[in-house]
Length: 184
Image 1 (cartoon, one colour):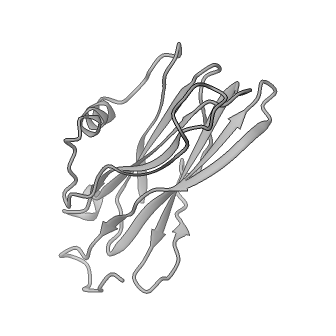
Image 2: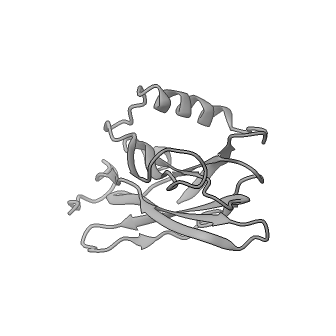
């Protein structure tokens, strides 16, 4: 499995740096027009109430896009997490871990690859932080999801709050070139 196009997107006074492909993908997703090859896109897991800093944070783990047709190199999943600041937050940090479940497995296991499972931090003072991670070269048949971990940090770098969410799944069915093994 390969990963590509890691892009923390921040709001506030920090500059926004996004890869052109992710900008297009995010524009499509925000407009509700993004459709993966199987129609599996835009799922999310959210909690919290919107509001000012100090209220319950809004957090989400989302499957932005799931492409499950073509050769293995063309198959991909794009996951994202979003969080809002709470009282006392100086920075926010997020980590997206990709998990895989193969046919016959009852549980998901974390996938190891360079750049996966790395903490990414916002700039100081950011109120809303979004992080997007795309993984490519997905095996089939398999089911993928992400575990999104959230940390709120104070001015000294200490964690003042933690949370985590699982994203919806991205199913990769049997490809024409792989052995015929049914997904569970």
